[in-house]
Image (cartoon, rainbow, N blue to C red; front, top):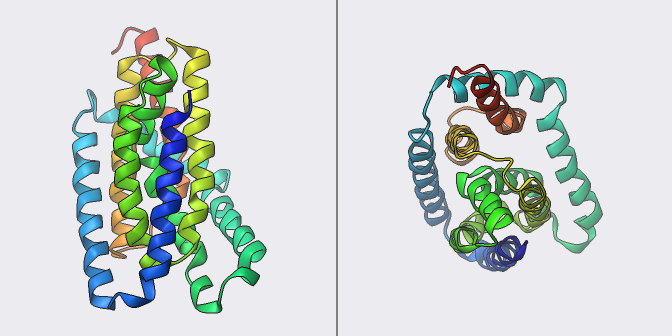
Length: 237
């Protein structure tokens, strides 16, 4: 039930390890340009996912409510603390240069690998049907992305595999337990919200245009299906 997620974790670890090893050998211009290319792809993929929404007000409402709850529950701060904890526990294993961007690499990679629509759709699909083809495709993409991230942001990217395992694995297991609990409309709106968050990641972490507390929007992914259910209950969908 979690084979697709396990494959995804392995590709992130391999890609992250390769990126860490070759990072210092790549000229800064190459790394910056590759990251910019990854950011452009992330924006395009996010837009594509958002355009699938059946009602733009659902992702909007989800983001607003999610941001309020995320700041209240300190999601962004908690994710950063996890990165700081991992950094403290492993700092004796790596040089100071490698550790320099540890938390940034951990947080950025965790969000990119977990928030994408393929993470949501693939995990639910595997949990409901046992088909993990979408997660295998995502695993290949994440593996190459991990090389790019790790070459720029360092070893923290490898530790994002832990968050990936927990996030996708939990979603697959939950979907399997609920079986028919997720409607197509719910999954579509979750993916639309995920697309908007991906755009935010590109703007904030990859292109560094403006700092956005992306972690605070995470509750929006759970709010979107709740709004769909509520609208369906009152016959407003």
